[in-house]
Length: 338
Ligand SMILES: O=C(O)CCC(=O)C(=O)O
Ligand SMILES: [Fe+2]
Image 1 (cartoon, helix red, strand yellow):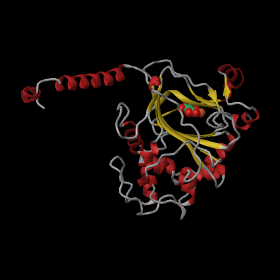
Image 2: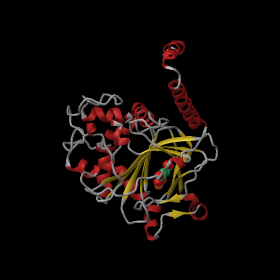
Image 3: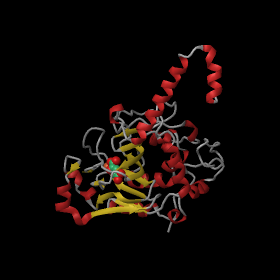
């Protein structure tokens, strides 16, 4: 079996990667091969990119259990969740959209994710499947909680509607996924384009394609890649305590449209044409960021009540302290140990 396409064109340039951010593993002094060894499991390192492209062509998907190394997954999870319950912090943070949490700007905070998404493996698959021009259209770390319902759909669309734009999506699991897993209608990428819509009812799939539905229950670190024309969903889970953690990114052959991509420049140790096109340097990025949220889509659950409760207590204590006569403040400070 051929190994990953490491060549002179490799994304990683030995010795050029500068010292990492505080939250990154030491990619700084790693060679291209060592970087891949840090990102992937030994089993995944022998995957042939040509085989992945064949699977995408034939079945519409490629799946590999435990593809990313436990260390890479742990770092990405830490990077993505550091500010999850912080409000008004001057750092990159995410949003709650009812029964989901999203952190879109993963490339602004996770060097490990940057290394993965620009890796020779990812670029090799994109090139093999989409040709020599492709662009990152959207990305996100997301958590899905029980009670969320995602209908069957395709992802060949703009931010608003169905569109004929060839593309592929990479999803990797950041938690073990025994329930609420990704599901894909095998072969549907070959015919869904004849329809001019993206959404399909549960009944339509159950009545016509139940034997073609593939379900991907896999451990943390597992990877699925699929053709955006294929019909898919995350299987709904009713249990309110359920949590599934994943990372998603979409790569299209349309290079003049995308959500805005916000990257930490520290991660870009080498900027060739391929990376520049992939990240959309100087190109329009007019798609609306998904999902569209506001304070009203933030659920007031136990965790958020505790965050808000602590905030209210702090503000009330502060204003009570401010109204105390100046002469009493030192004694009071001593009493509360501040
Ligand atoms: O999380 C999943 O399993 C599917 C996600 C998906 O289809 C999407 O975000 O478009
Ligand atoms: Fe989708």
